Amino acid sequence: MYKILEKRALNRDTIFMRAHAPYVASKALPGQFIILRPTEDSERIPLTIAGYDRDAGSIDIIFQTVGATTLKLGALNEGEYIKDLVGPLGKPSELDGYTSAAVVGGGLGCAIAYPQAKYLSENGCRVDIVTGFRTADLIILEDEMRACADRFVLLTDDGSNGNKGLVTDGLRTLIEGGARYDVVIAIGPPIMMKFVSLLTKEYGIKTIVSLNPIMIDGTGMCGGCRVTVGGEMKFACVDGPDFDGHQVDFDELMRRNAMYREKETHDCNLFKEKTSDG
Image 1 (cartoon, rainbow, N blue to C red):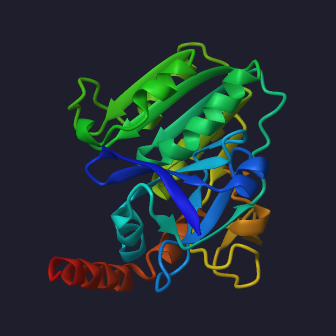
Image 2: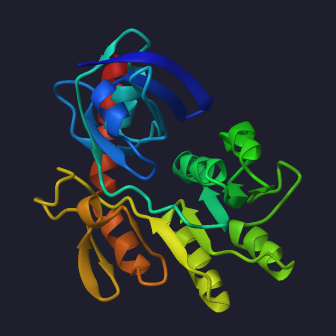
């Protein structure tokens, strides 16, 4: 059982939660994730560790309440407990040695991109951050990302924040304006990471993406998180979640991620019906 120390809404469907998990906090590094069950009857879901405090023994997670399990997690309050939690899982991001980086976050992917950017900035790397959201009311972590960015670009698809465009527009503008990067780190929806990777390939810039496919056990045993990278099968939970963006088969990844969408919608609606009935 893992006590919830803090909970707050970042936007209408995104929640920040801090949990007491001393062992995980003592080992966690940027890029790693946990697998949890909010309640006894929940399925297991992976969530990236969005932050950690070794002294306090706490970890942070940020999630959208879009499925039955995240709705159950979001229904828990401060002082209550997450049933099961295991981690840190996955390989830590390899972030040392870079002097100039662009970190690109799309939507909820900013929750993963932020700790990467923070680590790079704290270790002497010049960091430009480009973030994109559908609308202004979905923006999260703006102040935190600004604080660790040398240059910060915030775009919305509809221009409701006064700066319309896609993250690829913002990144291309920086590159064509003379920015030189050792690496671009792109984290967000697969379609976004695909087009960022296509863009950086034009300029020959190393690109790292963080993949979040269907994942069950987090140890490489079930094979549910398999992805194709450079023509070879990899397991995102143990071989990743970070991979070379120029080698990932994003089209296959998107097809596999959509396999259970109908079932997820059904379970989500059932949970909403149960909670509305009291």
